[in-house]
Image (tube, rainbow, N blue to C red; front, side, top):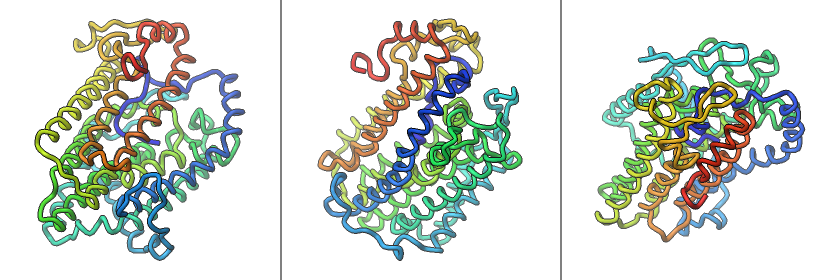
Length: 438
């Protein structure tokens, strides 16, 4: 599942953690066959969880662990108009993706020694989307009505993810072996459909995985947040301070991701994972409709928030962002140019691959400082919702489990790749995410 703009790789140069020996790949394939029941279960559980959250957020009790207030029927979920609206949104973002970019970046080296080229125009797409939405609202578009459409829109996004994943799977069947991902080729169709067989599925220069990673879902997330803010203003005269904070914090996060879009090219999502249902559903449905949970909660369950507590929450978010951005920028700079004056003085550990592992700066404090910053920000996004309900803290709980799982996967892959150098790094930096705790 995608989790946002954080870079979840080891603190060294370059990528390619998927380049393991054939023996290791064979063992992975045997394990993958055993994982297919889990993959099938997740393909049902993840959409069910998303719809559960959408339903309970608007209910009176708003119980995370309780049953939803009702089970929507087909007449509530299916709407041809909402499907058309969803495709219009995807088409708009695809058109913005194809506009001339301020920069074109090369990705990591592939198995065939080639490098793909990617347009760096995500922030441009965000700004143009904001301008278009602003013009539409000024012309009378009732954006505040969007929250009432979330269920059928989420259903349209989920249906799109399933069909899109099937087309990606069929496309991968005729793709050359060099184009396949390390982990999505177990031979089990269910597991491979879920994880994704092809690493970088493209039609001409249009890269589907790269497009979905940061465009429709992340920009859609902040658009849903804005619609919820506008509906609250219509209902109560003005948006609450809590709603402003949630919108501001999450807009900063999305804007940061798109401004530093090039950094996503070294993440595991791009360099290692295939593009299947896991990423397609996560990017297109899970992110916009689940990550907007705090704003959904605040619309239906307004919370009082005074300036002193709001200031404390802003400070918490600022600390998290400072750690998150500092760690990711330091690593990205080091990967691009280890001689850059900003990172040239950092201590490193040489590895058998010829690359270096950072062992000072942010990466000398914990092994995944970007995860620590992510989690601190996740806490700050939930605190404006008060402490009377567990529901707004779902994102923090889910994100913690996701990052711990990813951290364990990172550790295994880095150990395979760097061997003794990784053991030395772990000895020098014993804590994984939270200093002196974990």
